[in-house]
Length: 299
Image (cartoon, rainbow, N blue to C red; front, side):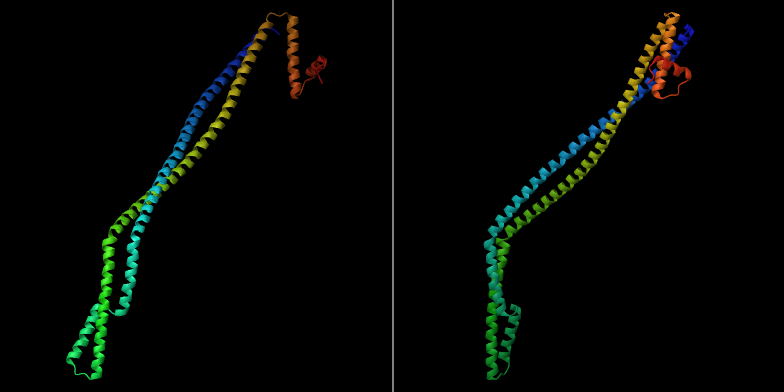
């Protein structure tokens, strides 16, 4: 091979190196862009995971407070039970008085106004009417009966007033406190219900945020795979460049060789090329086939 051919070959190799460097630079830019994108994805993923942790902790705090509310409800219910226990003697007395009142009412057979009206009417008949002895006796019996029924009704009303006094005096103070307790319990139950709704809402946000974080994590993992491929391409380009520089060094050495040494180098390179084509299954010319047979490397 002549010197100008060697120089031309070296020039072609340098041009190929320049092309590979351009390709490597493009790959490096892609790599840096991908790294920047992955950093953003990773930051977003970490931000979402931190949000998931926060959203997981808040419901626990809410439910812990809710448990305290139910403890207060239990304490208040215990106070109610104690108060009901204190009220039992009064309630029992009311029950006893009601039975007495009801028995009196059943015996009186009417309201006091009705009985008074009937009593006066019978009394007027006795005083103003000319009655037979038989009728007069009947009217007197009816008058006495009405009088007794009025007395019984008065007793019933008296017992009823006793019941009213117990309710308005003895039980009123309890009822007021019980009403206040019921109001407190209702308020605490509302707080408990609202707390549960708030916790459920946070759980929903936590789950959706976790799903979003997992999507970013998947994108990050896939991005790392792509990153690995880019790095391999860059490594391959660098390897090709190094190999080309070595080839240039080899060609430079050709300048110092004698004609016979150059012919030997040409034959060695040509044999190497033919062997490569043979291994790849490419079609060989007769000259290439002969060279391969003569080399003894054809199998």
